[in-house]
Image (cartoon, rainbow, N blue to C red; front, side):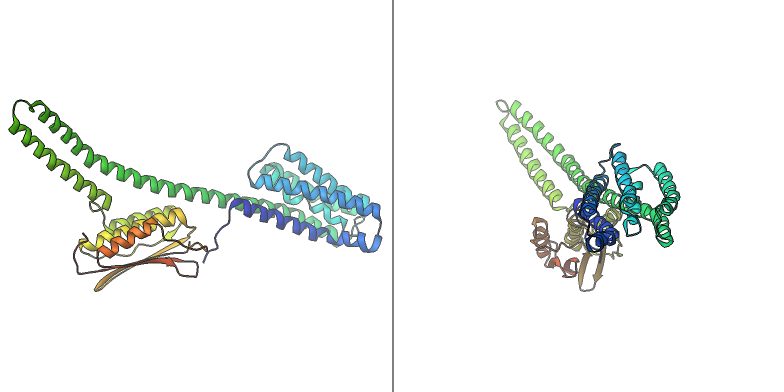
Amino acid sequence: MQPRIPRPTVVAAAIVALTLVTLTGLLAPAFWDELVVRRDPGRLLLATVSVAGVFGLYARLLWLNLMRRTAPSHSLGLAAIAAVCWMLPALLGGENGWGNTLMVPAGLVAIVLPLRPAVIVTAAATLLTPAYGLLLGLPVLSILYQTVGFPITAFSGYVTVWLFHVVQELREARAELARSAVGQERLRFARDLHDVLGHSLQAVALRAEVAERFVDRDQARVRKELTEIQTMARTAVHDVREIVRGYRATSLRTELDGISAVLQAAGIRCGRPEVPDLPAHVHEPLGWVAREAATNILRHSGATYCEITLTADSHVRLEIVNDGADRRSHTPGTGLHGLAERVAAASGEFTAGPDGDGTFRISATVPLEGTAAR
């Protein structure tokens, strides 16, 4: 079961918060030394103000870059953070934990700067760190830790932001595919409606014009034309009902082929079961179930897979399960009510709802022997 991904702002806020917690742990030994051992108010004030300013600017730069609101001035902010962090060990002494501030800017280097300058700055800082540490009189193990930690921290920051942006791009692509699928369905319906109803209405209009020309000269001709108009109108109404109900092209095999291709294009794993030869009255309701289920998965869920099973004995049973069930309360929508009515009209049974384990199941059963739905 894949966890549901929260909104981008929530994920970004969590990344910023966790980063600040990590930096706090990095500098905790230095503050402990100031509070418990040294107890110098002047030193403590300088350290608190400096670290608070660094943390505030760090959080702002990280947030803006996560939200893709980059600007050239961000490099100045990174330079300010680096200056303060490399100055604190010189002012407060590096042996009591303040040497850890040398690694603080590392996480922003590859985020704020373009990739090539970021590599150059990271390499330069990795080479300067041990020299500066020796100048400050830091322990050898501390110098080694900071030298190794600087490039690792820089790479970690880059990967974190890169993964965040990749996930958002995938979400946007998935939403676009869902909109495209819905748009294609609307275009198909509009095309069928135009092809059927447009011709019929045009023929009715022409017949009405003929009847109008003969209204004062040939009553028999007018009656004939009116009869034809009535026939054409009834035929048009019948054709529209066929389009709306999906009788003209609804096939379970075709629908399963279509939804499997659309869901896989949206990044949702979906297999397609083999469809045996089935009577027409089975294709109609189950085809609509498959179509509506795919639409709901694309528009209303965060599913990563969809499992479709089809069994046929005395009844044909179609089950569609996906892992995108919303954890909130579920209220059946108009689409599910419509599916229940279609399946009931075919003397079948229909159920839809969450299973309680994060999956959503749609199940429809139609008798193999029966009459077509009216």
